[in-house]
Amino acid sequence: MYKLVARPFLFKFHPEIAHGVIFRTLKTIQAIPGGIALTKIFCGIKQKPVEVFGIKFPNPVGLAAGLDKDADAFDILGAMGFGFVEIGTVTPKAQSGNPKPRSYRLVKNHALINRMGFNNKGVEHMVKMLRKKKTNIIIGGNIGKNKVTSNDNAVTDYLICFEALFPYVDYFVLNVSSPNTPNLRELQDKEPLKHLLLSIQNVNNAKPKSKPVLLKIAPDLSNSQLDDIIEIVNETKIAGLVATNTTISRNNLSYSSSEIDAIGNGGLSGEPLKNRSTEVIKYLFQKSNGTIPIIGVGGIMSVDDAKEKLEAGAKLVQLYNGFIYEGPELIKNIVKNL
Ligand SMILES: Cc1cc2nc3c(=O)[nH]c(=O)nc-3n(C[C@H](O)[C@H](O)[C@H](O)COP(=O)(O)O)c2cc1C
Image (cartoon, rainbow, N blue to C red; front, top):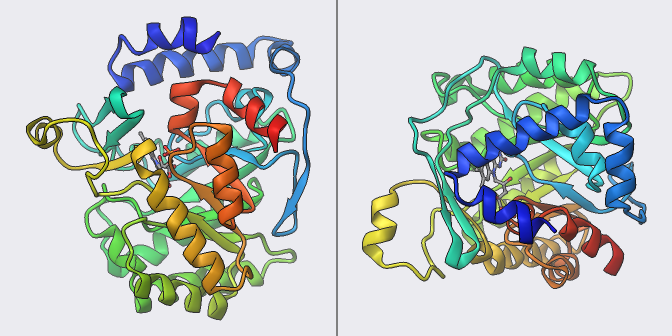
């Protein structure tokens, strides 16, 4: 139904316009009395609960960060079948992100290149939205830093978002892996990363009940950088990893180099990312002897792709492009066939 009717219509528009159309529709349905309940019936997911880092998820298929950046539609997205929704990346202050156009669909490869740059309405707006939560959907809060904040002061930005969202989200993801905020990925280096994670964990552990904190990493890290990540996860005792964010690589594309160059900078996601993301998950799982819970994300476009991520060692999976290209049916099919 989605692929037959909605997708051909939506794909006539620029990705960001299509996103606006989808979100206005979702928000309208969410606001109508009975809209959430009817969506749940219509989508008809037969849940398969799973417990990971102390949270009981109704099913292991979540929405990846970046689609519901401002927490506008998590209730309705949950009703469509997602077992959890990761909102954000949110920053302390609202920011407009990079100039448009900043996202490009690569239909031949079921992919997308984006350089959004953490456009969002800020953490206070997100709190307002979370206060209106109507369902028991599990929420991950994906947090980052403002573009104007230097890396030296980044910890303060993450702490502001962490404190503001703490009462409202079930788990946290620290995003240090977006390629679209200048120098952000330097926070993945050993010393700054350790400092960031320890600062967050100090505050987290001082709470009456701490919450799972995960780190989202780039697929472009080398094996020795992944070894450092494992060491730091063990040292700081964070709950797990989200692997992976978008890649700066332009491999596995069926477009000419001039077409790709014309798009410019940005992170590539979707099918071309699938194998590298699985490789990273497998490496992390094997090197840590399966001790670190991993949320697997990157190029999951089918039931088999989801199975591949779980077999590589992921405990949960997330969709972004899979949801855009395949629609809500993909969630149902994955859950049904696991
Ligand atoms: C347009 C767009 C915006 C994104 N924004 C974010 C973001 O704000 N924070 C984040 O952690 N990941 C963001 N991502 C990355 C996704 O969460 C996901 O890691 C990536 O797209 C790989 O999954 P996929 O191949 O299923 O799309 C974004 C991806 C896209 C396509």
